[in-house]
Length: 65
Image (cartoon, rainbow, N blue to C red; front, top):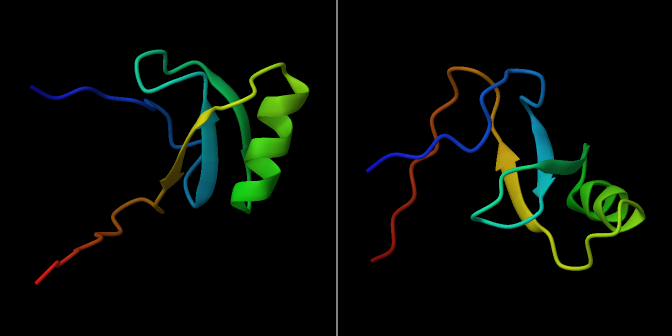
């Protein structure tokens, strides 16, 4: 099952704060995690769900060995 959390290129290359993993309402965004968290807290969300939106067509590969 696939869930689209952010359906916009507006936030490419930015950190995005959402209400929670289940509620993908965007409550803050910024160039750094702290900027996104500060904006979320200004909007009344104490513990937002934070993620990084990579630039379009950028692939991240993670390996845990």
